[in-house]
Image 1 (cartoon, rainbow, N blue to C red):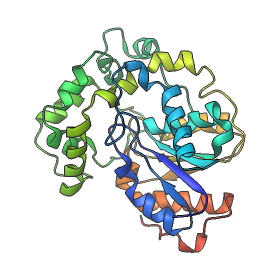
Image 2: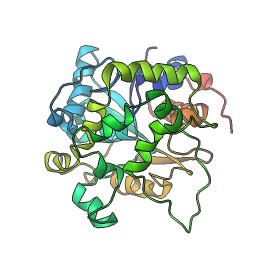
Image 3: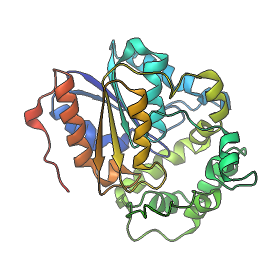
Length: 304
């Protein structure tokens, strides 16, 4: 497409492919839609060192992407880990940002391993702590990629407001590759095969290394998640996300002077796959109102 550039940053364990619906919808609505395989994923480079995956490198990658495409500034959109990249852009590269869209992920500081242990116990099997051990997580997930991806992305279910869901553990993630494929997957057979081929090529080493920089990120980017942002921002929350509760959007409201909050009722953590049309409609509506190049009349219809 052409028009205002919109760069979409995927999360773990996804790919540029995850934004395929938004790429087509945004291009049809008059925007230039861009979605890279991020560092360590798909066909992008996967450098060997753990420190090559800190937020400084990840945000610099997006600035260099704009350089390569001869783009001065863009709107950055991010889901899951990609949300931290998107929210990090106006902190580390404010001159390259027109606006930010957080999909599920609010504008908050990424937790440190000490904070997770303080919250869940020193011997917790919390998945972020489990991922710190070299080669453990990647070995577990690569046992059977087809089963892992068939079981990873499932529809969200209604949450009990009085009973928070249990934390995701390393054991539960490792079990994905040993369980019969789910009967309610969000990914179709062809989509699963696309992910399998990509991760057969790249492996999980690079993607898991993103988690191994949690403490380093706090040191490198002390203002991340706390710096007041004065550019247009959009926060999309999913009411059924058990890992990033919708209430976390309050953090975005506190740190952004110009922000809209939109809720998608029937979506869990995997909003891109579960409610792609609703997500496109929200993004295009906001982009069309805030950035003149979009054509609001070509928005895709909102579906429940």
